[in-house]
Length: 493
Ligand SMILES: Cc1cc2nc3c(=O)[nH]c(=O)nc-3n(C[C@H](O)[C@H](O)[C@H](O)COP(=O)(O)OP(=O)(O)OC[C@H]3O[C@@H](n4cnc5c(N)ncnc54)[C@H](O)[C@@H]3O)c2cc1C
Image (cartoon, rainbow, N blue to C red):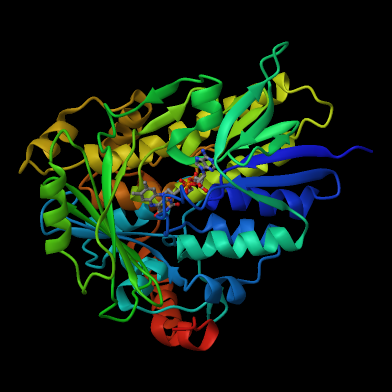
């Protein structure tokens, strides 16, 4: 049986994740060649992840300790948002489950009913991951309760780690600049890519992982890009690394400013920082100054400029080319969803791999599923900007007053009216995520489901206390994040 020849253009996180997953799981029937250019380099950011990465790593039999040591990784229990709903206000979007609901109504409506009856406790008391993030604690399990977590990692080291694993399994790496992409005149499919060295690489399927440029999908095949900057106006970022001055917290920090927002991502060996903003509302100098003024430690690198357009490639699979990573679109890094989208794109491609050579149906299915997935994540990110009381700058005025997509408008309206959090199967973000962000950004439901009021008040309180006490007990059993890292996966300093 002839192997399918898969050619990956680009060796950033997208390219090497695709190479490793495909050679690992389909290597007996697919040949993998990856082309990258050291001269061009990678985008060099993308260091916060979400819990789905654990599942993907499990599928690839990646050893957690080995991976964490190789990438100087830390654990992430959520994102700490400062100044988003209001200046000087903060909240955590944790990866945890909040309390325990029933089929009829979620736990938060029980809490709302208890508060109505005089209960004084915070909703965060019912979520272990949230309280552990605040306390700077971490363990994989607390007593016998699994903890839901993700990672912060060094993106350059991660690509290198995956490269080494891919090559060990037989993936071929070609160094060079892609100068020309040759098309089949009969059907417009990509036939080969030509490198500056003169080398020609032919293939059956081409995966475009060339980053924002979209060299194959955009520049060569002319697939349009749907621009979402009327909802997500950011088009610029500056990234800088600093020395760590405090023990790494188990969360990403997202600090809103009048002109944009700043990330802080703790690794074992340094901290990644950056500012995301729109040239519509701030100059590069202003953004740089805001970033530098709010750094915690001395800079190790100079701030590096990155430009992008939020949106999505109209078709991520076109002819025999599949765009994965930044070439397929970019929302913005607020909820650390890009690497997750790379992993779901890779899995979708692996499931739809057209071994019969017929691309059209597979492409159609792939594009439909990608669209639904991206639009759901897009709405979740827009929520953070749209739902705000901030009125201290033109940027916040723009976001507060813009029209949200109908799908998001509906979610916000129904929650504001009666506390109902819409759950659906296509949404990456589940009820607890929507709840934490909607409440954190300042929506206060006018009513809540009456199911909780059916319980006798004493029983309601007893059940609440039982859950709260379990969280407290589990929290007490957890070591500090720094101590856990030091014994579980210390990275060479
Ligand atoms: C400001 C910012 C912050 C982000 N933060 C996060 C985050 O916290 N979490 C997250 O999940 N994601 C984040 N992302 C997204 C994340 O960085 C990307 O999804 C991830 O790095 C994948 O990038 P990529 O591999 O698609 O592209 P790149 O890293 O740009 O790689 C492109 C590759 O293509 C090669 N290439 C390009 N042109 C040619 C050519 N002509 N010839 C040969 N090779 C070529 C390059 O050499 C390189 O190897 C962030 C993105 C930005 C912009």
